[in-house]
Image (cartoon, rainbow, N blue to C red; front, side, top):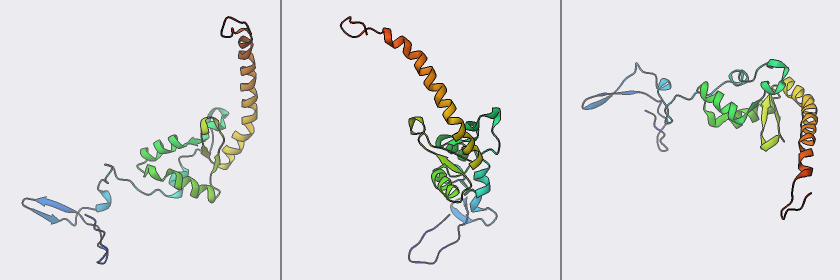
Length: 155
């Protein structure tokens, strides 16, 4: 039980147990271990716990694998039983401290976050990936020149 009273001094949270017809205080239980309103206990992570979500190295030589999107971070927070509503605050805090960097301007307005060395490697690899994508688009656009316009006219 937790009480937030404006007119009285704060009361430390405590647990109660139902013993019909009364509810009695139970000092053997720890209120920190009880479920929250959302149904699971949500704990406040430390900087190190949040940083552990971002890998130090990236598999397959692809730095994108070391970066995390907002959705990936929410799933990791949920998995570790952290409050998933704190993802943005933690990213902002760690970015201000220089422990992570954030990449903006991705396709579909995706925002990626990761350790500084992974972000630097990703930024270096990005122009190569964009060139390959442009080449693929040019290759596929060859078929567009033979498209037929409305009304039966050829392009």
